[in-house]
Image (cartoon, rainbow over all chains, first blue to last red; front, side, top):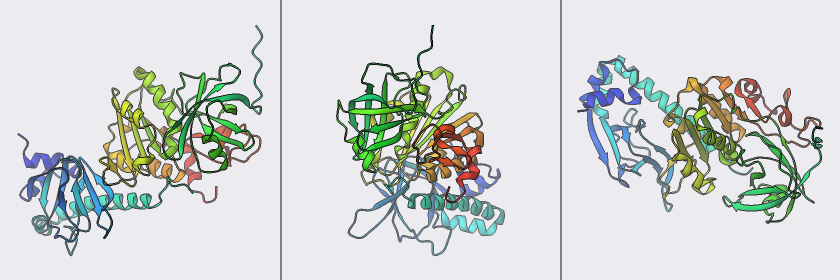
Length: 152
Length: 280
């Protein structure tokens, strides 16, 4: 049987993590499932957790009044959903909608923040990994803004 | 036996349009056959022809057809100006002048025994389609084939049926992404580089062939390097204003290279210093 600790340790986000860290995180983790077309979270809600996606696809959407939601990115297996739990004021900035049935590990943000404050090695490691994701997503967004396939 | 007389590369050969297929709202695939029944020169994946639309002008277009079917020349053209509009407006039976094939090709022989990664953006899938045919016809000579394709939106995707068919081939992975997905789109949304993390390949034994807008290729090449591909195993297809296609006129000069003659395919290690130069 797959234990939460093993699932966390084997998730690409935690590749190369020190072996005792997944055990520390397991107490903050739980399994999560979302049916197709359900919202995992919505803009403005408290960001109390983030997700390690194990299967399925999630659309990150921006709500625009009098328009249909705008899908700005999708996230899939092996990726991370949600980083607002890390930074004050801990509120969601986007909507996240399952566009396929999604299996994930939910990590409790409050629990994690406490553990990161108590163990700065863990906190620094988590920050480095999230910083890399933020950098990759910022670069992808800049690339997307260029609209390179449009007729000039 | 005397060798067959060589055709003057500056002299267009008469071809006729045999088929026109609408791929997207502004992109069409034209199939041409020789008007006098002579076989076209064999082409190498990645080469291009100069297509002469009579009364309008001549333009360089990459060959997008199957190299094994060299009696037909296939071109996928996006209508973005007067000459390309005239080309995509051709009807079956219309005449077109063809010079070529010209230029270097994709390194399909050097890729034998390796995984092949094809990264295409927008109309850039057209010059790469012959590589895909070549690999699929000679499956035993290659490792995995991974095709990453990015387009602006779902309605801008080329060769939809073929993408589905390629994905069903053994040892072949096809990942498609769009920059802007509508709510009904169930696929991936994000720039083409965001697909790399899902590609199942072994970077040290892979050869990447990349075609799309130059800025897209810069982003892709940089990310491929981060993923462990050596610069000399990353190939890009360059585009400049090609006129003579044989290195005489200098219109397509790019640093020390003539794109028409020395390219259009270059390895990233040769191109990298030039890609970061302004106004080249």
